[in-house]
Amino acid sequence: MLSHPFLSRAMIAALAVLALNVSAPTLADEAMDAKHVIDNAKIAVERVRDEHRPVEQLNSLLRRAKGVLVIPSYYKASFIIGGSFGDGVLMRRNENGNFGDPAFYRMTSGSIGLQAGMQSAEIIFIILTDKGMQAVLDDEFKIGANVGISIGAIGAGAEAATTSNVGNDIVAYSRNTGLFAGGSFEGSVIKPRKDWNAAVYGIDLSGPDGIVRRSQLLYADELKQTLVSGIAAAQPQQVN
Image (cartoon, rainbow, N blue to C red; front, side, top):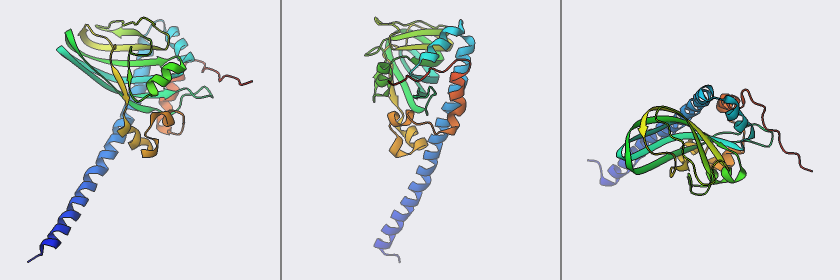
């Protein structure tokens, strides 16, 4: 008969193997999900640009942008009590005028009020100031709390939302499908997806500030090119 100490060691070894088999695919799945968001972000930029008129206004803002946050799929569903979420990428314009690597973020919100319906949206937040960029890079950013937001919306049931200092720091465009009566992006919370950042870049680069300052992720090249397509990139400032 096997001794209890042997059984204990065998059980521990089995559990360790099981843990490895479970955790490894999870990390791979997170990296794959993150890559899908990059692909969908490229499509979202193309759709919003194609449907927005006049396109020159959007391109002008992209030309001046310090950075962009693209949420390719932002889902809302509610009946009196609402909830919304969507994953996306934050990209910073570097000193050479190009966009750096994408850091992964999640946008969520919840609300109680006269709301009913279902909706999905593709959203581009164009960040125009250093203040706005730093606010998003912080660990948690609440829309309307410390940076002026201007929402330009496209699609069924879309609603423009403004704050008292509209357009000073960030301008957002959305392309919506479905129907949503009431509500806006006000009060939504944007936070880094540290799990996805770690899965793609490694644990040492899971913080968004370090990620957006680099430009090494080849998989994101098409998204970067789509953002600057048809516009002259902002020239880096000369230091005297």
